[in-house]
Image 1 (spheres, rainbow, N blue to C red):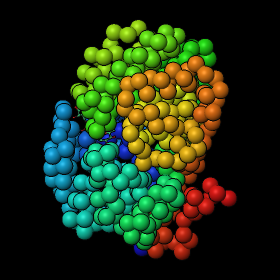
Image 2 (cartoon, helix red, strand yellow):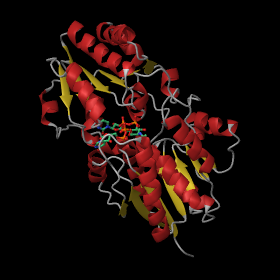
Image 3 (tube, rainbow, N blue to C red):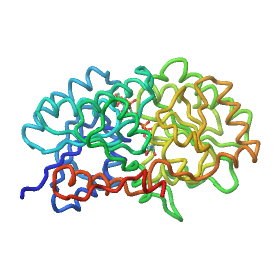
Image 4 (cartoon, rainbow, N blue to C red):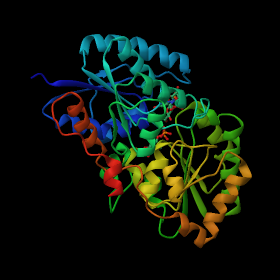
Length: 386
Ligand code: UD1
Ligand code: UDP
């Protein structure tokens, strides 16, 4: 019997972090021929991850442009994927999550009549403009996909409400697979400034912000809140690895560049990032992936958004929605820094998103769906509840 040709397609940093563990797993399966195509919607931030996980792409569309528009990303990925699919002729394309790479690679695969597997399926806010454009990207990808790998039972339920019931597998999130390989003790950071911090004595906040729907007033409010926290709690140190988006770079520099206890650093390699997260006091972020990682490391998270598609850790108490208003964000952060009882309430390790075995379940599900085994994959939700 011929091998199943599985092509994983991704383009941005978070997709790469969450797909590399799966690519590694697929490479171990004798029934599968694993190919990797990167769109390079991100360039440096993608290459950092490929290097960390030692994954070498078979195809690289190299589409990134400075300050790229959604129209340009879409047109270039669609065009580029057409050629790759024609040449590689995969049996299955795997896409991840909710970026423009995700949706457009799924669309191109549909046009080429190639089956699509959606990793991290079923996350929803039900607000098509928030997160923008991610909510629509993942919904449309769900419509196209043939196989759906939902991290949690709630994600699978969301799909069921959209009448997507066939080939839905609850697997856990591959981000926890990644995390279980990166955190180390003792650890020396590649970013040397991070080695100068005494994590046992200092209060350290890890801050990240990049979302398109926060551009404008919400982003300004987030910067103002960070400034206020740094000024009102002089002993605190805020570490902000700044996303390479020119908009984000400028906002960070203009608003926080001159504050002595705010460290603006380049985007961190993923191993540095995970080890930093493990050592800080508190995380403030509008990122999706970080909302999943920090709870499993027992770090309180303030989410700098109005809504989240990841309610599980909010329900568990480790994540709070801080919104996008300056005073509310600053007040929540200051309370956690000053009130040990409030802090302890949030600082519990919870793992609603995965157990480090998601890639194995996804690979098993692919073999099952292609009729190579009669054994259905293990269900993460059932494992978590037992
Ligand atoms: C993209 C995704 C978003 C995801 C985020 C993760 C879309 C529409 N957005 O948003 O869902 O949460 O990635 O970070 O798919 N840049 C570089 N080098 C890099 C990466 C980015 O210079 O390695 C700069 C470029 O000027 C680029 C800009 O950042 O044009 C924006 O990148 P883009 O992928 O369009 O948007 P993100 O905000 O990164
Ligand atoms: N990350 C990283 N270096 C950084 C910032 C983030 O490696 O400087 C990692 C982070 O640990 C998480 C992922 O990148 O795994 C999140 O990416 P991002 O916030 O860009 O996107 P989102 O998850 O919001 O789509």
